Length: 433
Ligand code: S3P
Image 1 (spheres, rainbow, N blue to C red):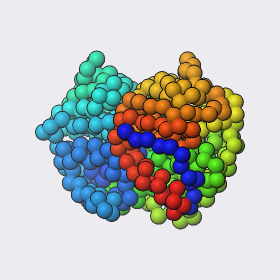
Image 2 (image 1 turned 180 degrees about the vertical axis):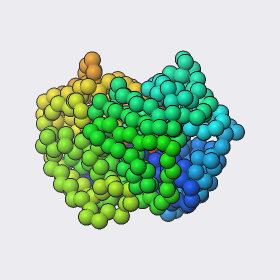
Image 3 (image 1 turned 45 degrees about the horizontal axis):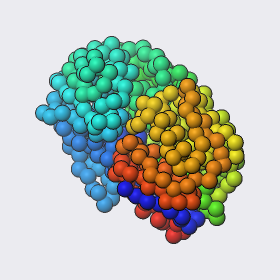
Image 4 (image 1 turned 90 degrees about the vertical axis):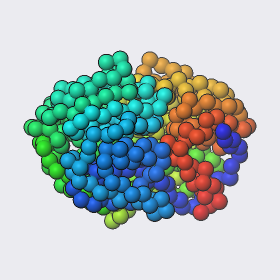
């Protein structure tokens, strides 16, 4: 449990831990490659540790250097991976479960994937159905809709699949299985989702084609080992960006943060809301995976409500809890629409955000496909139960910075999932370093 009360302005230059999405992918690609890879500056938060332990259970050799935030991966190609002796525990991580379903589908042998209470509630048929069509035998509770799931890998064939809902996790699972399949695997999304997998596969020597929201690759293909250098996690940075926007007197630079445009639509929304933001892309980013990196400078700003909907939802889906807190301080209504996916995240984020904002004296209401936040509100203190959802916990900690009373976030350990260092980084920002 954590309490936050009045904080000083956020100043100076800070950085945030490595990007979670890129960390998962670098480890998985390292395990699939033949040879030694190294993943530098990765996130070592709970979700990525779940991927590490699953890959170890599949036979990949991974050595963690905690101090240097580096993992060495001894990959021996797909043939180096073997039937796991025990259940693969994805913990709280949807990315681990969905991406590794794609890997398990291409492995000879039998794997069982499970996760914690929240992951066991999340929809899996979106990935299970196309993997079955590629040839894998997958079963699970409610016919494979929810974990635990069992996978018997079989020889796979390529598939031409159109997703109903844009999802980088589903797209990535199919592309990973496609590396092992005979023939072409093509995935088309209704809107563009984060494209780290495509960029990183290209970097690892895989031939793939991209056109609009369609990506395809012809299997089987090998993955080359390489040194991955992971940029700062934009989704984690977002909590500090919103904190700096809301706290009078703030002027904060976040350096070395990933600025992949398929992740940063929240910055466009904040600019429309009137945020004083400046982006300074690094000219020669240290990262090796073709990912744009730079500095985001945020100054305290007065905000107005806007409409957030359509194609940009997948490119800011993880940032909606933080945006919703910004919206409590904006003049007028902020409408989040076309956002049903929020109900299938680590919690039902529509319900939990609406309840939490109202509990703190703000005004929010659920709609048929999202929610509306009306502002500006004077947030008071109160107790928030984030229902095990890391991003909800972090969002309400930020609300605590501008609330007049004390905000207590119960179940604070949920933040271990993605950003255990949050209070430390916030401390640096409030000390002006
Ligand atoms: C992720 C994709 C998104 C996102 C999640 C991470 C990824 O999920 O919400 O936090 O790393 O591919 P969906 O694919 O379900 O949209």
